[in-house]
Image 1: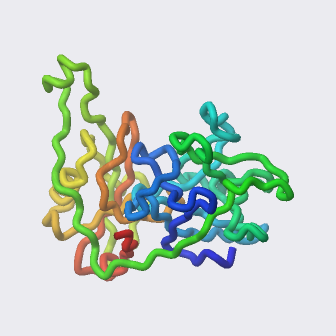
Image 2: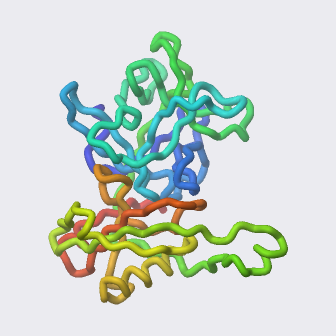
Image 3: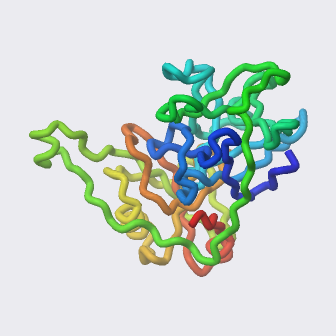
Length: 285
């Protein structure tokens, strides 16, 4: 666990597939390996949970704020073990998102252990198109080399990155939808609250507001949130919170693909406040 510092940003590089990194998929749910090391999807923020049995490592995506989780769902064909995914931190204790970082011995790197018997692993050693990340039950004496990861700390940016420009949302009456049967932009419920200058915000449901939003454009979402809180669009930051116990994460990429029926929790932070100055952005470029 000494390789990780609370609130630090890191990449996890697979020791066998040397140029491949653990990434949050842009559907907001899957986890895979990718060579796109300069993407926010390859950056994870460390969240150390101190429980009765000692500290555990939690990792949440710098892109979407959701937490790396083991599951009991069988992996896809030609993958090992069970699926890993991104999920919300919506209960005080969620065992599936709590990991131990174990030194990997002579092979170097670390193992990420979940539940005492399962280890995070990459796939695709021989079939490179099998990029899914999974968890596998293994005796520590027979650990696969694909379970070894190298931790790479990421420095911080001096300034917030620019958010992406506007993207068009496909509507139900668009020609591409009616003729070519493409899916229109998904509706999502946006629940939001404005933080005070020090970053505090209420938890009570009645203190949050909500509206429906279609599509993935962060640019358009910022415009609507700024209108709702009566601020200029370039005078706010948006932080997504993945569950009540998830740590707020600055949102600077377009929303995940999909989103049918999803609810996003957004904390609005006004520029010029201590809370705004305290936001941290990994320098992935």
